[in-house]
Image (cartoon, rainbow, N blue to C red):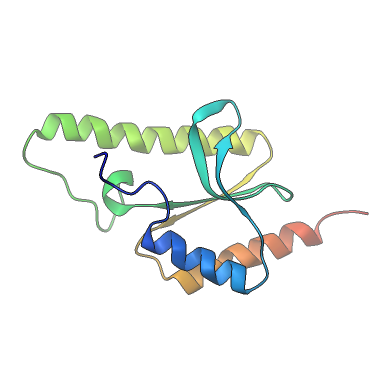
Length: 129
């Protein structure tokens, strides 16, 4: 598992390139407040938008998740724990006023970047001077 990329994955890089090219600036691997061992993949601290690009295997994609047969109980516990941690992290950030967007690694990067941009535009438009 230590060989698995935790950051700068292909889908993450594709989305980041599109966001940057469209003029959006962001922070990478920002720590989740009060959860020092958890990080936000792409963060927009001003409007408080947290983006997570989840791998299908590691985060239990309903379309593409697989279940290893060898050591099945251990893997089930591990992957169920990942899903529970994702839910806890999302709830924690939402409770602190963040907008959380989660995407699967198989989603089209253009569609992901467009959704993020629309969310940022909507949130920035709601600001009162």
